[in-house]
Image (cartoon, rainbow, N blue to C red; front, side):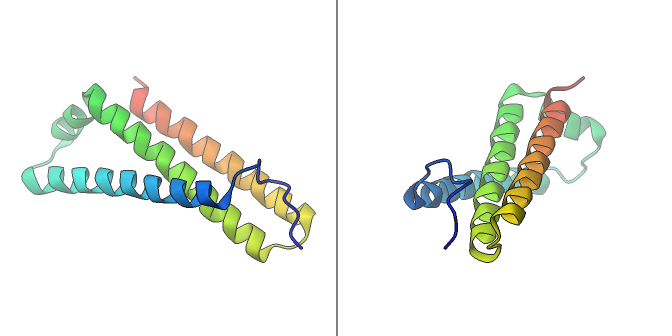
Length: 115
């Protein structure tokens, strides 16, 4: 039996709903960028920079970044609890995933809101 050590009291329904919500946000972000690429044939640095200078796009990008992290965490947690049975190895795996996702989010924030 798998020990419920890294679940933090979440329910399967909450995880299922979060996966769906984050997937919709990622789809909307992808479609937004696809629409940008399709409507702008000559994209240079100035055009790309202007797109991400707007607060709306920065917030949307940040929301997409958080959605990717949440979606990845739930997916990786599910795979780990299904396939990694020894508790110690699973905890180490979870810690590595959490640290990597945290680093990616911090890096993304620096890219989006940095100078």
